[in-house]
Image (cartoon, rainbow, N blue to C red; front, side):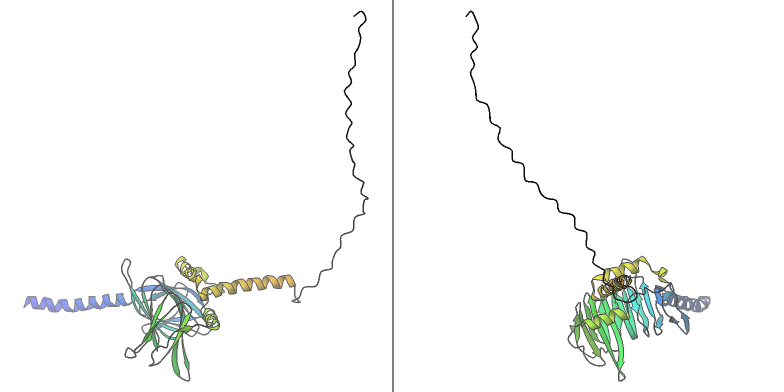
Length: 302
């Protein structure tokens, strides 16, 4: 009887311990905000808190950006996710520990996102598609036309496997750099097609870096290295081209003045130097060598 009573008293303690352990595992920090322009909110359970640069991201958070906003998120596996305005992202699953293979799963419910995939197996679930990759750069766009949801996926680096979000819909395609696919509800993904330049430009503009933010001090070296690693892609290359073009435009504007056109400069002609008559060249005459003359001088008395 005493033993049974001890077990009964220990059961509530064990259940409470397991509950605390599960709650801690579900709410562990997996990332943080490194850039923010505009406003964003973090939904954590039943509460909503405004996001700030260096705000922690837990493994069960939902992140929402408002209009005219950008948010860049850095995760502990070195993945970098950049959300456009009016986007909604759920951290569905995050398993990572040093020295072992991890897995990260995100739900992009709405909006646009560019992802630089880090060290774990990476999946993004949208309402119509599932993208699986590792060590790649991907652009996502979840939109609606006539209340019909579709997901646009563009591969910027590496390879990405795409299938429908409904497991019973057969078919899977692989995207290579510079290709894209549009997945609709309950339809297998069509064959990949080359992404037009306009699509690449739209992807870059929607998720480009937050250069105008006053809170850039929250950036970390890992975020910069990841973004730098993707500089060979069409998205990031276009961004650098835009910056150089902007710089070139500003320097050109400064040189032309307020009118936008530079006034022609008067031509200046250097004065002509007076001509100096040339003297004829001096011709040296050959020096005549004297002839050899034998002179005999007689000595008297000889």
